[in-house]
Length: 316
Image 1 (cartoon, rainbow, N blue to C red):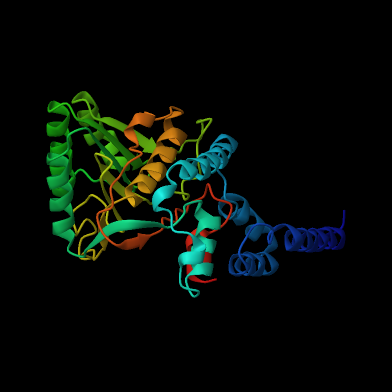
Image 2 (tube, rainbow, N blue to C red; image 1 turned 45 degrees about the vertical axis):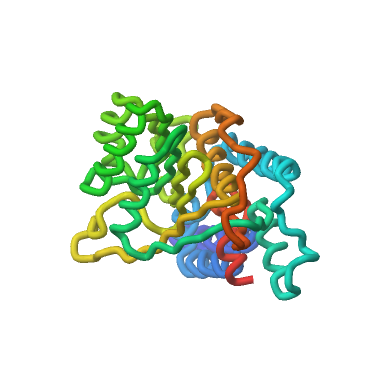
């Protein structure tokens, strides 16, 4: 072929990519995300489509997506059994009704009353309070964190877990395969040897049949003690300056009341996804007494959901 024909073929291929991706990219994506990818593809068709294939598609194993769908159905059915504290829409102020309804559609959970919330903005205080509650645990401790470091804070929590196991408390730790990579290589082995159950969430690897994309991570931070106390928020189990020179400022909330059961459901769903084993249903107490007057609604998000729950709730 002549140089002119090669140039023409290249030009046709570029425009073919543009037109195909113009139809394909906006499917199941937010408008802002679709615009960004389409702009890149229209400016640089071949590099753009390669980058989109690597990073643009929310790829999880089909098995995990199917399990998420089943988990959502189970959550909705289970709430019918625990309906006493569920807040009915017609009892809410008119300005809150659409927010609660949208949150329920996105994340499956109803709003529940009778809870107590304690905001914990101090980094060190959060670690201390979690350790104190683990130390007081009688039955089980369930932790799910994106980053669990083998540093001072991480080893303190690890020691509390080992001590709890020695008292006969069942302890399980879920940590992200990328965010907690170093701890999984060392500290996790020590914990397993001491009787703490440890699993990596969203494992990666070229030859893993159930591997997830390395940039799609489980960023949840949840602690549940005896099914009665829960923590969630933005703080990981690590020292505040785990990135040298950039001390973290985080916010966690300590929860008691019926909403803890919903945090348990989020945790158990991830446990099921990673192990294929259903947790002990007896661990979820059907009767959690009201501890306060706060109305709380849990809205989980992540790559297993078909929509970007957090963004759609905050920016409707």
